[in-house]
Length: 157
Image (cartoon, rainbow, N blue to C red; front, side):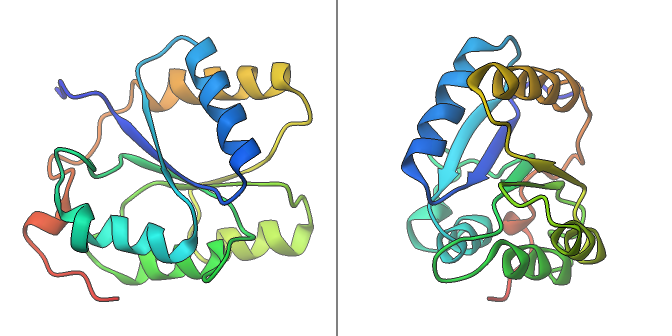
């Protein structure tokens, strides 16, 4: 049984969306910690434990990634593909959390191995409801015992 607080890495470049997520996270019950990567390259560095992100006390390995599609430098699809091609990370749950509701994007996300796909809600109330459900489900799941595969395996970038 896990004792640590599960962490969620939100990969989101929009400061306003991030601030809304923070507020909604605080307003909903549950015990998930929200962390942020501002673009696709930062997300890869974070997940690989590169440079400053090697300090897992300060930057704990996430139990779940919420991933936007449209990101600077490297798209959410590229990040998802990288995660699924790195065997130590293959099992990491990745949920697309994006403004796009286009069928082609939904299909591509699942083809690349997304664990789920949510369109960003239109209102703070809808966002709080969605995040409450997310915290309720993901906060109670059991995760692999090696929460940080970086400790044992070199990740390629």
